[in-house]
Length: 82
Length: 154
Image (cartoon, rainbow over all chains, first blue to last red; front, side, top):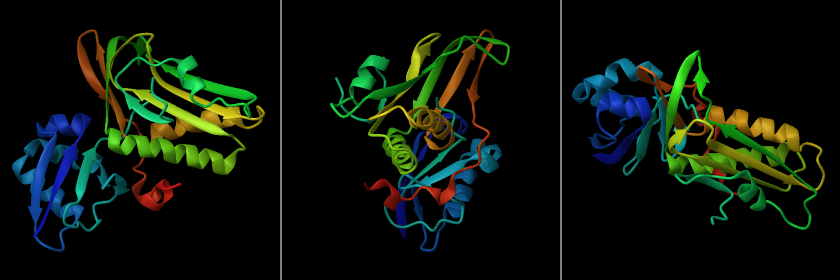
């Protein structure tokens, strides 16, 4: 099994109603697996799915990125700083 | 006073203070940019902005932008400080200070820095206006793995 955390920010955090979630997935899981898993329990995330940016261990990643034990995933909307 | 060159802070920020972080005897020019909370956006009367960041990722991304700048222009030091939390109209949300021996390149570097902040740094703003609130979201595509961990170690 793989275990880690996912952090949610800004409108994605509000849609999910959570800012940090612990996850546990089987070996071979990708970010896509995780997002699908989160959407089952947090319906608010569904409508956000094609509008989320992804980071794994604070580096930009994609839905195809393979997860490893201890990974910190972050999901957030397109950035709007400045 | 902080001496960090790349910082996400909840405290008010000043151009003078951030500029001092990059000055040294070798420096003949400091170009600074300040982003200010604007009171009108898309025709709406803005009351205030609330900024949120992922600081543990945002600070390394600011350092990454400085690294990109140094690869393109002959600048000495770069400091970028972004404030988060509630900010009122007219307050300063972001400051970029670029020090160089001479002015050549420093202006272009400053322009590049603010453009890149809006592309890759995980900071978001929520606009509170008369009658509602809305998250402002950038139109940009995700950077994917353009920025990798190895790029961040100088």
